[in-house]
Length: 102
Image (cartoon, rainbow, N blue to C red; front, side, top):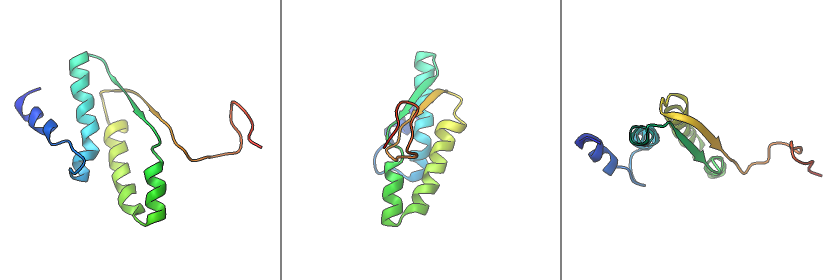
């Protein structure tokens, strides 16, 4: 990492601005790609939990805008990404490929 990248990396924290947070995964992906010479795999567990909370507590629009930006930079336009696995907690249907809910 060059000096600018090291400084940028140091700014990653829980209290950074939304736009910085949205792009931080893409930057981290690039650093990992350059170091390991392999595209990254991103695991995103329970991605829908904050979305449910935002809907219930009235900050849906803010979170939806952030998630759009995050998903676009981290997944859609990330050239260092090999694959993403996302899990959620929301039940979508009563049937599964593995078993039937009753």
